[in-house]
Image (cartoon, rainbow, N blue to C red; front, side):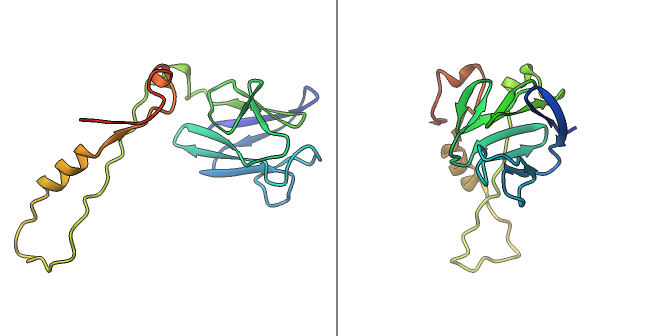
Length: 160
């Protein structure tokens, strides 16, 4: 189930926005998915990226900044209960399926093997992909986006 944002202004809840699109924008202009009509909000203020049950917030170089739980952000993974502040508007991130225990999730993305097309292969012979897979594994990198290991491993490291 996708998350949602509960929109409030001056502690008065006014609207809910279901995060049912992969990319949603927030800002003052009419072409945003979540429109916030206030001069303290930039035309295109921030965007939300949602992949499966996880959502990530990115400030789009707004004039007054985007805050999560009182801290300014440029990019931020959202957790259930986070409070986003844009201008004087609060958006409460609600996602019951995205709990604190999700910090240790691992996502494995397999790249498709690349074929050398510079020579004409014999289509009747099997392709030896072992060397291609070994090369991909030797070039693999790990990037920790959030969780307990973030402080110790803040940059990507090669796996050997």
